[in-house]
Length: 262
Image (cartoon, rainbow, N blue to C red):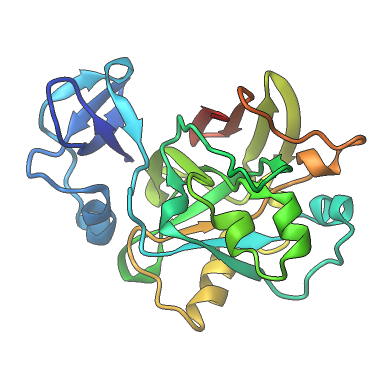
């Protein structure tokens, strides 16, 4: 299943449903995406009202995840471009709920930030029993100047709108393997990142197991698994984001998100 939250014509409140055959089909019982993730294999396919995909506005699939975990330096080439040593265990940080943004953005740059950057990432979505429920695409938007001068990354990584994700959640039973998917990121049409998830130092299940050692993972929680080489600060010269720039991130089999900098 491809689970989506969306705004439909004629409805004041957001709806949830399933994306299939170019349409969005609502859950007739009013279930949310989190409800379906929590139900796991017991989830019932959507059978409510339907709209062509182009007639709805896609929202963040789970608008209020309980927790958003990020992983630093999880591709060897990205660690190299930042000058970091390869980690012996996952480097985990947290993005706050206010960072959530729809897949279409926009993202907003705080006035204190001068070096805004993108990070295309495969994202794990937790399902029933703390297991992997599905996958999606995310941008781990980062304020590099804050990240460099502040030892904790909460402000650098967790600012408002710094986690656009979607466009939907592809449930784990519909993904043959998340361990070898192509991930690409473009900025204003220029290809910046092109890698495969097989290059991850710590794979999705390893990350889930590591975080679960100390934190209970709940349906709808997100784990952004890290970004490959090609971020703006790693280019020569560095190329940071500016108002009007458009970021597009695509992951094989999971769809793509595209958003601008407001």
